[in-house]
Amino acid sequence: MAIGTDSRPIWAVPQPAERKPRYTREQIAGTALRVADQEGFDAVTMKRIAAELGAATMTVYYYVRNKNDIVALMHDAIVGDILIPDGELPTGWRAAIAAVARRTRQVLIAHPWSMSSLTEAQMGPNAMRHMEQSLAAVASLGLPAQARLEIITTVDDLVFGNVLRSVESMTRAAAAAANPDLVTAGMEYGRDLLESGEFPQLTAMYTESIRQPGQAAGPPMTEDALASEFERALASLLDGIAARMDLV
Image (tube, rainbow, N blue to C red; front, side, top):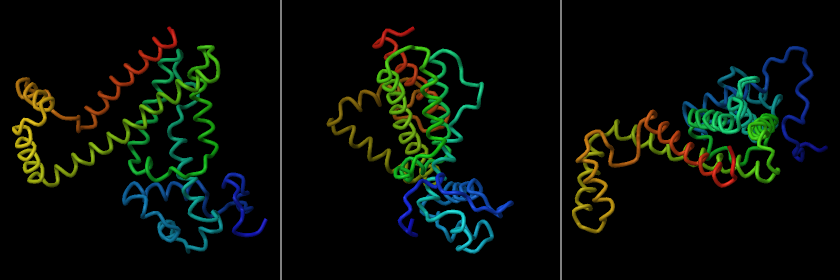
């Protein structure tokens, strides 16, 4: 196969035949993840990874063909962290699928850039293992394949949506902490809009919240509050799935 036309996944390409390679794909992926977590996905380049490893850029090309390979390895490393260790998947479909959902949310929030930056990554062996584990979580239901897949994808939709909103909320909270004046100005403007009478539902919610100390008028902003909200949403979703499919 000619150079530049090899479209095989990185895992289908043999690793360097050295007895003790200087670097491994896992090491390269870990380095790329650290850079992305600290500085954002755009900071991940072949040159930067080489610098972090203390190697020449061309040395990295000895282990991976291009940045697409790096992205694939990064994605697979993240999905690998999502996997629940062998023997620790709870029994019972509801507890099992909830454990997978919590783990997925926890890992994705730890890499807040990943949801928007790894959408084109090639799926690797850990993605297969994750799907296998998700199927194992609902296997005891004895439902047709399509129904089992529907449960998994429905829960995934909740997790992915919650991760995106949680990351946004925490980003806004960090920005607010860094610039309190911006928050004050925003709240004053918001109160002016409420007084216009154009937003009766928002006004009613705001009025109710200020009458009940400790009750927030807006979406949760702290990690604990966001996690609690996710747990309530997950419980409601699983209740609905159980009722719709007549599960126990």
